[in-house]
Amino acid sequence: MAFGYAVEKVNLPRRIALFVLSWVGMATKWIMAGMMGATAFLSMWMNNTASTSIMLPVALAVVHELKNYSENSLNRQHVAVINGIAFESTNGKGSDENKIEELTHTTQSCQTSKSETFVETNTHLKLLCCKRQKPEVDDKSKKKHDQLKKGFLLAVAYSSSIGGLSSLVGTAPNVYLKGFVESKYGGTGFRINFLNFLLFALPVGILMLILCWFWLQWCYNKQELFQCRPSSEMLEVQTHLKVMLNKQYKDLGRPKHITDGTVAIFCGILPLILPDSNPFNRKHDWKYEPIVKWTQLAQNVSWGSILLLGAGLTIATAFEKSKLSDSVAKILGFVSGVPRAAASIIIIIVSGFFTEVTSNTSTASIFLPVLDSVAMSSGIHPAFLILPCILAVSLAFMLPIATPPNAIVFASGAIRVVDMIKTGIVMNLIGFLVIFIAANTWMPKIFDINEHTTAHFFNITSVLRSSVDNL
Image 1 (tube, rainbow, N blue to C red):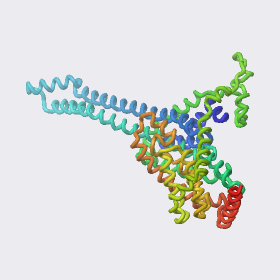
Image 2: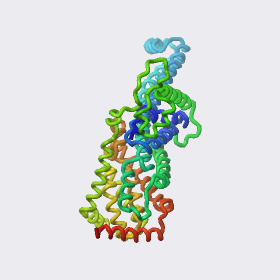
Image 3: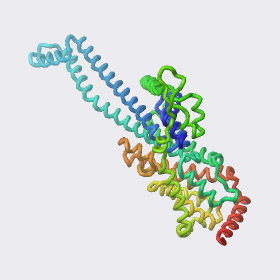
Image 4: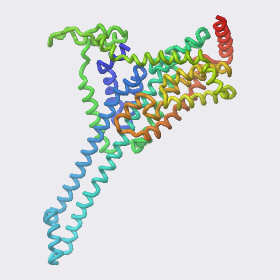
């Protein structure tokens, strides 16, 4: 927690994001890909809400620059058209207004040649067409950038959720899973640690991130998706964007704290000790202040998340003691009679849609005790149920209330609920498919689950639980 707040205070996440964006290429599709990668990486190690809040201004700045540059380009084109018409009118011996007056006079007196009348009428019609077409072009450009803005905002929210499920410390349900496994399956050989969870979840996150990028491009930037060589106008826009991103990166300046202390921040306690500025800098009067004060840390640490995690464990215990988990397990009793793969996909779908209307930590605390009962009654190793479930509860893509990142981007006012539902339901289906494939391919190898270890697991579990009941 101290590390997370310290890196936020020194603008390290923003530095990482701008650095990545300045190197991924300036095409809009690659900017979105770089932004999604940076957001997901940050979300693996810090709170999803914090990573979304950090990356949202970057996304809005990119879209704003694209919109301003496009509007300026359209204005320049319009001026060029007007100047060209005026030049044509001048070559026809007179300004446009004078020509129109001459045309009226000619119609009345019938003394002007037909060729002059054609030139004057043609010029007048060109001006009228230009004035009528400009609002249509503006509306088309505005619609395009509104779509692009939706795509960038959803990219930040979705990649934050995807990054969170990829690491054991990325989101609260993953941490809750480790505590649940240690309390329920201690001594059975089934363990959750940082490495094996990362090996299981990180490929899931990478696949989902790639498919999410492709889907958002298809929905909001289809024209550029299959474009190999950008036009000269797009190249000019990309050059302008690169200058803007580099300027934002340089505006951050160098970190104020001692350079060697950056590495020491990872120790967690050193941000409370290291000075905020260089004590050897003689250009100003140095006064000792730590990088992070305890009062600041106490105010900004997400104590609510810690309480929520404890509440989740309490709810799980209450479910078990009150036998409510057994009752829910009886309702899901049909899962016991289906093949393991079918049970896995059912649990993934139910968990994924249930988390759209409840907190993901609450969903995990409700479902894991139930799935433990289902696993014990059906003879399925609990890893095939609880691990897919814990990833599925992070697939909150459809509603603003489903997760804080969705609420943050929805509060911008650029996204409607129907937009989030239409885009999010496909993302949910993508997540269901990827998690299902992971649970039935590389997960058993990572956690060493086979027929022999499963039989050994149930033998030890039955002995341990019977001894606990006797006590």
